[in-house]
Amino acid sequence: MSPNEASHHRAFLRHFTANEAAIRAFVRRLVPARADADDIMQEVSVVLWEKFEAFRGDGNFRAWAFGVARFEVLAWLRDKGRDRLVLSEKIVELFGAEAETHEPRLERQREALERCLGEVAPEQRDLLMRAYEPRVRIAALAKESGRSEPGFYQWLYRVRKVLLDCIRRNLAKGEWS
Image 1 (cartoon, rainbow, N blue to C red):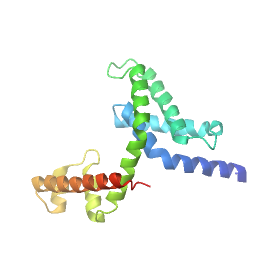
Image 2: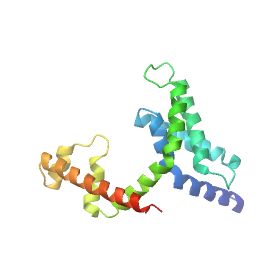
Image 3: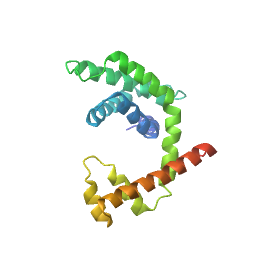
Image 4: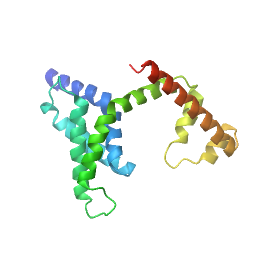
């Protein structure tokens, strides 16, 4: 790989990794199933890399990536058009525009959540994150934590409340940078 190619590759990775969570959230809002969103994200990643030459370095990578993601969702919809449970292209366009409008606020909320999660003790944070994994069995987590199932749900409620209060405080102070 030449130095120029390596520099190009690093620039793409910097942009992509800084925005991947927001792009994934954008796709997830447009597609009903997580597995479908994961498949679409793979295609979005490939297209972003293939078309990165067309991206102006001083442009807004996130907005550009959202546009690519929207087209990939629409392509997925055309492929799934036979399925009556799939949203129409017009609805996806509407949701996409709405998602882009709210993205700055959602990004600040994600950053505040990350900051607040950093204040939770590591063992509690691990348990909290595991409670939201797909196909998790709360009864097993409760037992592992030494709590009854109702006690575990109560603990989850308290931790979520502490996180919500922390997020609200951070957002009110403007502490998301």
